Length: 287
Image 1 (cartoon, rainbow, N blue to C red):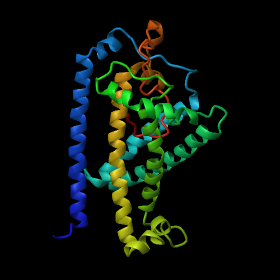
Image 2 (cartoon, rainbow, N blue to C red):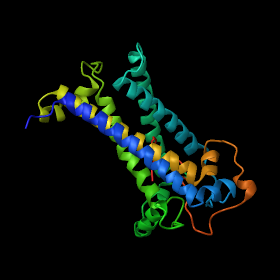
Image 3 (tube, rainbow, N blue to C red):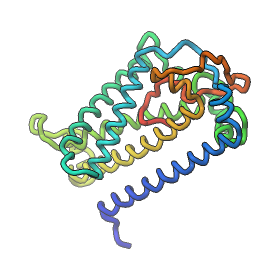
Image 4 (spheres, helix red, strand yellow):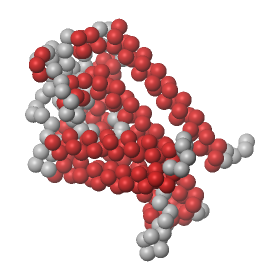
C-alpha cells in the first residue's frame, strides 16, 4: 500500500472538515426544526419564557474579554482560512500580519482571562468546575438537547456540557497559540526563529528535521482551527435558541427579557450560555 503524501493528507483534511461542517449545519437546521415542532421556539420567542438567571450580572471585565476574544477569533479564522485558501489576489502578506496581530491579542486575552478566573477579586473558576453531580446529570442534559426530555437539570450557572466545552477551550487555545507561534520561520531572535526554538530542539530531532516538524505543527494548527469553527458554530446556535436574552445582554443589545419577567425555572432549565464568558472563543464555543 502506497504511503500517503503530505499534500494528499492536506487535501483529505480539507475535504473531510468541509463535509463535516456541512453535516453539522444540516444537523443544526434539523435541531431548529425540532425546536419548532416541540413548541420550544414559540415558548421562548413568543411567550418569552426564558431560563432564570442566578447571581449578579456578569462584571464588565469578563464581558470585555469575551467580546474581544470573539472578535479576534473571527479575525483569526478569516485570515487563517485565507492563508490556506487565498480567495482573492494580493492579500497574503496583509492577512499574515492580521493573523500575527490577533494571535498575540488572543494569547494575552487568554492569560488575562485565566488570571481573572483564579486570582481576581471576583474570580469565577468554580462556575466552570465539573462536579460529581454534573457527571451524574449529564445523560439528562443530553436527553434534553435530543428532545427526549422536556427539561434539563439545574445545578448552577452552566450545565455539564457547557462546563466541559469551556474547559476544553483552554488546552486547545494553548496548543493553538503554541503551534501558531511555531509556524513563524523568520530568524529574528538572535539568529533563531520561533519555529527553531519551539520545535527544532525536540520535535525536529524526533522527526528528522525542523521543516518536517513545522509541517506537523501546521497540520495540528489547521485541525484545531476547524475544531474551533465547529464548536463556535454550535455554541452560537445554542446561545441564540436556548437563551437569546442572555446573548443580547452580554453583547450590550436591548432585550425585553426583564420587562416580561417570564422565566423557565419551573422546569429547572439551565441557560445557554448565560451570557457569561467562556474561558475559550471561538469560537469558538459548544454544548
